Length: 355
Image (cartoon, rainbow, N blue to C red; front, top):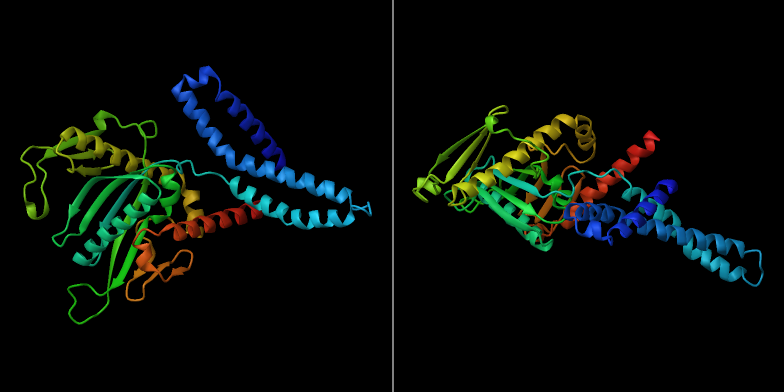
C-alpha cells in the first residue's frame, strides 16, 4: 500500500506542475482532465503525507528512549502519535477503495406515485421537495424535466435533473420503494394508511457514454396538457421519444418549445439506456450491492416514513431516526453518510477476505 501511495504522490506532484504549464492552461480539455485527476489525488496524498510525518515522529521518539534525559519527553511523544498511525492507515484504506466511475455525474431523478392513490401522489410531491431542500444545502441546481400532476396537488410522476458536485455519489442509494405511514387528510376515522412511491436515481449519461443512432428513435409530437386534460398550449410542443431497439419511451412537455422538450427528453433517454447497459455489465457489482445496501432496484422497499411516530427507518442498514420532520425538510445527510459508511465497511471486509 505504501508503494502505491508513493506513486500517487509522485503523480500528484507531476499534475501540480502541469497545471501551471501554458500548453495545459490554454487547452481547456487537457486542463479539465488534469484538474479532475489532481482533485482525485488530493485527499489520499494529504493523508499519506500526514502518515509519513507521524511515522517519522515515532521513529525519532523511539530512538530517544535510550537517552535518560530525553526518555520522558519521548514517551509523551509516542503516546500522542502512536494512536494516530493506525487511524490514518484506516482512513487511507477507505480513500483507496475502488471509485464508482459515476460518482462525479449529475443525476436524473424520477419519482412516481405507487400504491395509495391521491395519498401516494401527495407523498411523491413531499419527497421531491425533500430532495429540493437537500440539493439547496449542497448548492446543486435542480431543474424539472417533466411532471404529471394529480387532481389533489401531488405528482403522479415527476422527473428532474440535479446538477452539481458529486451528485450521484450522494444520491445513488435513494433508488427503490419509499413507504409512508400516516393518517391521510381525507381519513375521517383517524386510521393510519400505508402508501408507496418509487424513486429512481440515474447517473446522467453524456453523448460519449451512450451513442443513439437517428434511425433507432421515433419522435412523436402532441399538444401539452395539464391536470384534467386542460390545454396548456395549442401548439405541438410536447414530444414523445421512442428508442426502437429497447422500446424505451420518454415524454417531455414541460417547456413551450418543442426543441427544448426534445433536448430534455434525449437527456432522460440517454440516462435510461446507460442504466440498462450498466445493469447488464455489472451483474457481479449488483450482487455485492444487494449484500451491502440493496440492489438499487426500484421494486425494493428501502425506507419507511412513519409520521405518527415522527420516525424514518432505512431497512437496508437497520437505521432508525426519530426526527422525520427534519428529514422531510432536507436533513438527509445523516442517512446518506450512514449508507456510504456501511458500503465502505463492507468493501473493506470483502477486500480483507479476498486478501
